[in-house]
Image (spheres, rainbow over the protein chains, first blue to last red):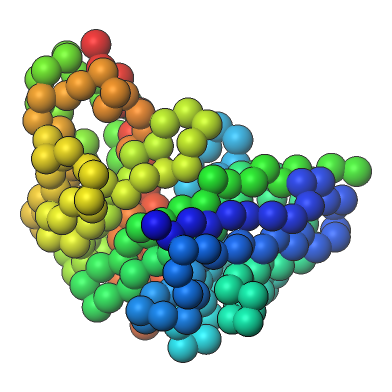
Length: 122
Length: 110
């Protein structure tokens, strides 16, 4: 059974960079042609897609966050990472990592991490 | 980018059928996927593609689509189905495979 686990700093100061890692276990991050994604959810609000990294290494980001986001993969450690720069209080959210299937007619997120709360505060 | 619109809240009597809808231009081109989220938990995929259920999802959950509207139907709602439900699809506004979530529907089982 595939499992994903987020880790990283739970408290980030305004203007600094948020950094999170998602460790994948129970399967290889390089197999199956799957892609990997980050999604966030501000307290009491809905889900917001941040971006994904394809199995090919190509990255695609939410246009509203694109200038501040970097998603990368470390295949040797079977994990992928998120960096979000110049954070403000509006970036306070639960951050989820997920496996994603992207096809010509649809997209879906089939495995999710448990989520980690990141608070932006001085 | 495209938007997906959901009713904020829907209620259903125990054992009855409820339909949760999602509207958006991208749904004319792409199928929706649906997620169930209970308080304090990560979302769980319940429907994807034309009408596919992942292993372990009860067959009372089904999906359909018509025009710019996708629907998640729960036939014979159970108390444990009370949750927030989110739709998701590819974004049709650009040439890249961005994706977008609906705002979510809170389902109450009476």
